[in-house]
Length: 207
Image (cartoon, rainbow, N blue to C red; front, side, top):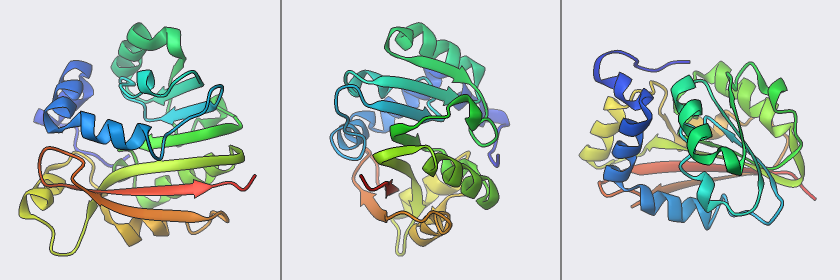
């Protein structure tokens, strides 16, 4: 996993600080887009949240069968305390330990995870998760992205990000080359309170 973990970057590993940063940047806009779009669920859906953090999206996903995975024990402890009644949480490395979540799943999502992984790690994860999709299921990833003629604030924030593998939209799409399923790639702006760009990738398993 490629990320900056020294000095101020350690703050994002603390659940309170992570949530504060998310709220300050504009968590509500992102949440509204995701939960009413790519992550929209049906009652009873089997959902796997990979890199779930403190699981701040969980209350907005409805009546589902939910499992969250994260490498950070503090995030898992916090998520279990707040949302343990809404699902199951596992402290695990999603790249190497997907055996802990065999599926199949109607929805698998990774929010802000791929840009913390190098290409080999990301491909391994994507291939493994894609194989765990149920018929009609989908895999959704959502990460910061570099774009041409990017606003200097957005580029500056990307450069400061603790994840060291922020890619272009094509760079993210290339990670799905081994997945023999349809892929939709979208570049988004306006999801935060500051100039910023995100890349959303959606892989769909036919019904």
